Image 1 (spheres, rainbow, N blue to C red):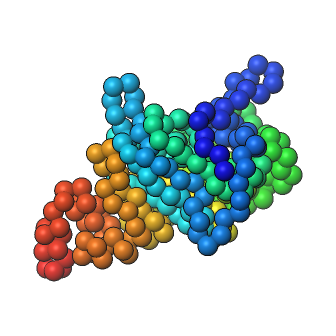
Image 2 (spheres, rainbow, N blue to C red):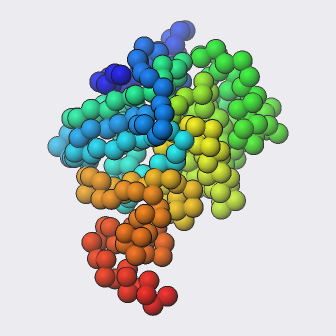
Image 3 (cartoon, rainbow, N blue to C red):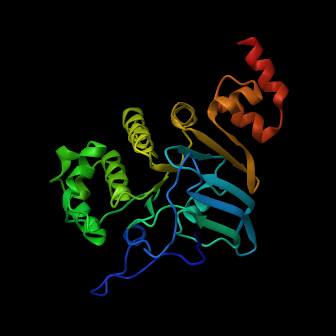
Length: 278
């Protein structure tokens, strides 16, 4: 079990500087760990602080990410959702506290999808995945396209993919090497409702196979329907957390949106009156 203290970024040969996606694929292979069981934490954050210069973003955040679950980070813009997700994924170092990976010593510990994935033009979707697969010795990247429903676009150049297809290719890339944790930053941002639902379905399929899925999203309806655990961030810390049903019960709310409003304002009465009158 090892606490990360440095970003896991490397440079490939030929003078090419790796992108964040390539760096995530080439995640360090020397972390000791034990197999997860019975929902034991896969990654934990303990009293994590994060600041940009004099601006504090996170203060004393402690959370646990478990396998076979979708954990959703929600909260207002600028509250630190992406910062926490990237810290849990090992892409940024916290200013204080620790983030610890407890999982198995796999070839790749964590897969990461940035909010706006970008791939080198001139290559097809399959060729792109073949490149990432070569970094970890995977032999069937086409299966990754099938898993996200992109097999029909295998020969399409990445610059010709729609926004939704690009997101799906990014998710496929994040699963290369079967990492125990896949972190998705706003995976459905800017997508139409049908594609948004499909992206969340893919996330649910990943969790059903035992993968821990950590994502950020502003689509509270889909989070309520899909997530197993919700972590609500506000004012630099965790305002509340729990399963969607537990949060709705706690606030006597009819929807996760009402729970969100109540948790941020502290006004339970407003939500309860609204719920009683519906």
